[in-house]
Amino acid sequence: MKIIGLIGGMSWESTITYYQVLNETIKQVLGGLHSAKCILYSVDFEEIEKCQANGDWDRSAEILSDAAQSLEKAGADYIVICTNTMHKVADEIKRHIHIPLLHIAEMTAVELEKSGITKVGLLGTKYTMQQDFYKCILENRGIHVVIPNEEQVELVNDIIYNELCLGVISNKSKQQYLNIIGDLVKSGVQGVILGCTEIGLLVKQDDTDIPLFDTTLIHAKNAALISIDKA
Image (cartoon, rainbow, N blue to C red):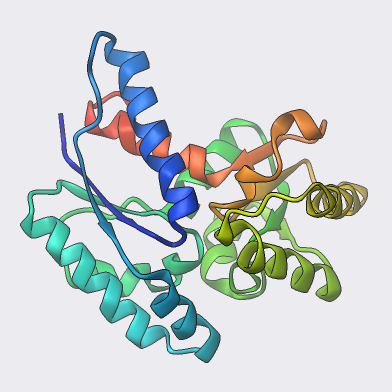
């Protein structure tokens, strides 16, 4: 079994889901008392969030590259960044390590292709929704990406940072997300990406008829399967 190197803590709320899904997947496939071999480097999210807010992506890349190097030295066979937004600096992190990095958007794109999705809605932080580092990976594979309007982008972002990252789950916020998903459906999307690792804590597939692609579950499950050569 390969050793999974996790860069977590962004937020630690969703890192819990990663650890749970990794181990559940290994148990389901191998049975018995099997569990995932993994090493977690959990960063201080306050420091990362300040870099995001100030546009200091170079500093955030340094922090996460140091974490990736530490995981490699500790014996990790590949790296998993347990957040969507910080894949903005994925290429920079790759330059500092000699082991693979499993990109969350690339794995999500594969799942979309398997489902025949060619037009998809994207929810996430404002950085993920508005900047190109994430969307371009999907669009380069022929998947058209639709994001909410500007007011909705701010609402989605505020709920992520001021509620979900703090462990606050609100029925009001859930309904606001579902309303936004409804508007995306009206625009013709065939599915919606939950492109922030915390959104799955709030919105579930049972809440809507439109197919949801929870990137946390996709990323963690595939990372686990790769560790036992079952991907």
